Amino acid sequence: MAKRYTRKELKRPDQFQTFWTRVYEFLKSTTRPLAIGALAAVVVIAGIFLYVSLRDKRRAESSKALAQALRVLNSETGPQLEDPDAAKDQHEGDVPKFKTETERRDAATKALDKVIQDWGSTAAGRDALLVRAGIYYDLGRQDDALRDYKTFLSKGPRGNLRAVAHEGLGYVYEAKGEHDRALEEFRLITSAGEFYRDRSLYNQARVMERKGDKAAAQKLYQEILDKSPTTPLRDDISNRLALLQK
Image (cartoon, rainbow, N blue to C red; front, side):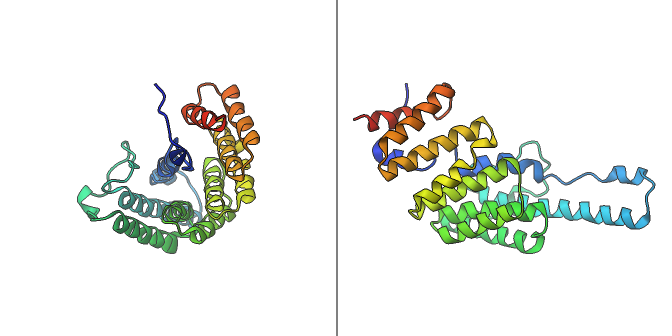
């Protein structure tokens, strides 16, 4: 039986999947140290060999730093972000216990700050901006979130991570009451695959509701159901349509 939501519950921007779960699915592939043993079998100029070795070592160390920051973020009651197949570089006891959610987020933010400061030119440093932007959004620090999302996008990410950033910007603009700018950001994720096409339309429809354009919202919600009958957003959409038709 589909769950029924109240109007207050349906105002939440993300009913289907948490920000952190989505982000980590995309980050998992970037937090594993690269193997460089094969380089020893290649006859190259000593300078090039040294450059490649240092480059890969830097990538591995930066990825490890980001993974540790995610462990802090994931401690206690946080969503499960750990990659169960990845080797454990540290023991569980290396991540302290936090008394409150605020303490945990503060510690995670500081860990991400260090990743960005120490490894800002690496992919891990870039991706740490995306994670920190999500924390700022959760804390209501919309201007800080806006800055990090824009900085992340300025570094040229591609694929799903780029879509996550544009969606995050959409949420920020929505929270700031800039609905037209939110719509622009949500539209930018349409081409990132079926999962994001549905989310793009869904988020656009929500914003249309907030703007008072019920007809446009209903049209977008129905478009999702028509094109993706089995979408995980189906229950939320059905409840929203029911409320709009009252």
